[in-house]
Image 1: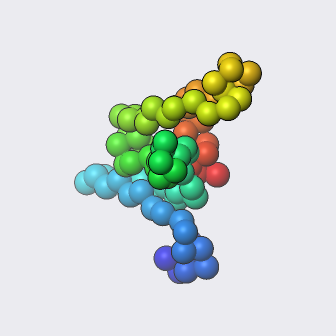
Image 2: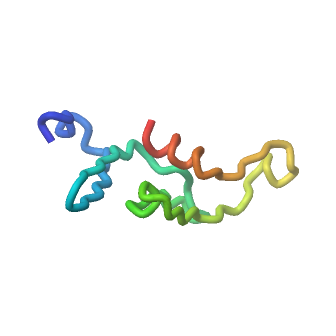
Length: 83
């Protein structure tokens, strides 16, 4: 935690994947979306291993009128969660 300076940023999260030969760690900086009740949606460790489980989110204005495309893509979810 000292090396990554996580004490200065208490709202960050970590996803760690371990195997006998390697270690992968991703720093989560925020949710990729919010649910209908404004609960944050975060990626889990399986997403970073290639097994994605993306939440479906109800459309909100202006997406309800198809004025914007607010679909969540796999790479978009990773970008929003780890930037």
